[in-house]
Image (cartoon, rainbow, N blue to C red; front, side, top):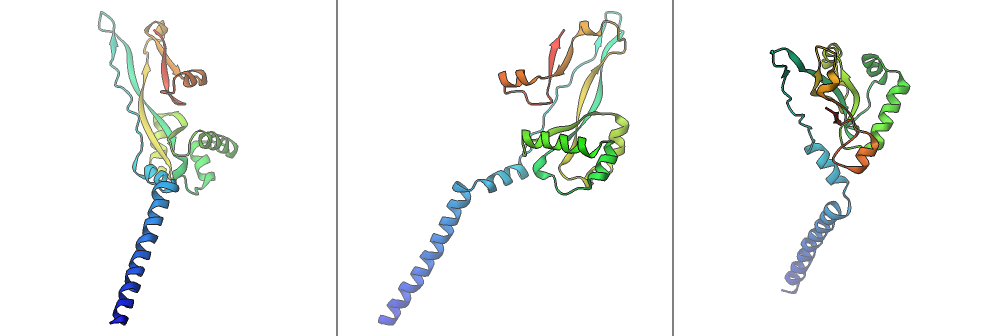
Length: 186
């Protein structure tokens, strides 16, 4: 009978020890070490900026004054960037290795988890050329948006224009991020 009681305590102690090990590890993963949370957030959550659809502008005679053109931005999430063939990348985007390193450093200094603009306003031809090659460069993706175009360049400034936000505006209003456009006048 005494032997049975000892076994009962030993088995109970083993189960309690295993439970404590799981509990300590769970506390470490969930509360203390946030690396796993950041990894899971970057795998699951990706903020996609939805640019507003803007209408066409006509004069009173029905002549088109303003229309929209597609623009393609090459975006990068540095955390997802794996080892890539930088020579092939630079050749594809017609960059020097120094320009590539400079842009990459600037983006990594901004954020390793948020998408940032690597190359702005790619032409339709450049977009078509890189579309088939982009899978070779993990972390890079294309974001499509529209830009305003003016068929008659005379007095286009009267209809208003937009420009990239300045660092001063970003400091004042953290709603904006680097690369965003803001209405300037009009």
